[in-house]
Structure formats: structure tokens, C-alpha cells
Length: 148
Image (tube, rainbow, N blue to C red; front, side, top):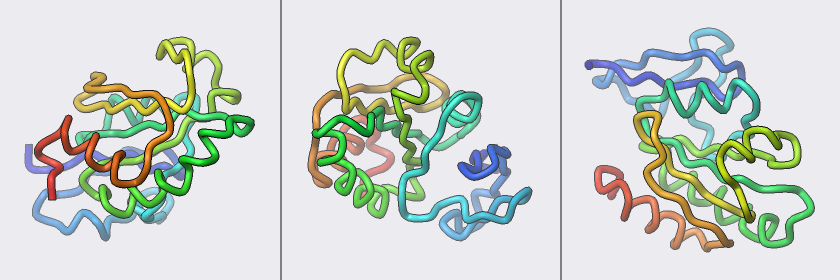
């Protein structure tokens, strides 16, 4: 395939971006938002499934909740990891309180939990707060193609 398919986190549209084009500068063809903004985007409902199944790039999901102390502690590290991993990985956040059905379907037993998807399948999962370096290293260990 000569193109990447990337789901817009703003409107949920699937965008076709030629591999020859600089992917970091891509904008959504429907809403005009930048595809990669340098920070994780919140997803939920149908958008979550679209991200996991339609993106040709790996997708890292942080399952969290606003009341969770470790989740709040890890949030800045996860945001900083986006700066290092984008545009090779799509970083998203799923609020488990807002999306209990998805959390149940994913088998979430503790938060924060990060799940790495590629090609519509779960590649790896880890629970517990991590630093930026630990997050980046964990992703690169499971996806050697993402290594800098």
C-alpha cells in the first residue's frame, strides 16, 4: 500500500496520506484539523474503534479516569511521549468513566493501563504509571520499527 490511513481525532474521518508525503504536516481533509498535534487526543465510543481498526499506524491508548491519582501523575509524561512518538504512533486517551463498555470489553482491571494496537490487534499492554522515557522505551521495545 502506498498510503497511510490515519483517523482524525477531531472529527473521526479516515484520511489517506501518501507515504511519500511528510506525515507530520498532514491535515484532515474533512475538518482541517492537524492530524498530529503533539499531544494525545481523547477518544470514545465509535471513534475509539475507528482509531484501532482503521489506522495503519500503531495506536497507543492510555485508559485513565479523572479521579485516579496515578493517572493524573502520568498525564504529563504521556503528553511528553507524544512529542517523541508522533507521527510514527498515534497517541490517544480513553476515559474509563465515560466509556465503561469499552473498558469492560478491553478487560481493564486497573488504571492507568496503556494498550498498544497495530493492524487492529493488541500488541502489548501494561498497567501502572510510567515516566516519559519508560513509555517511549516500552513502545519502541514492542514496535522496533518505531525506534528513532
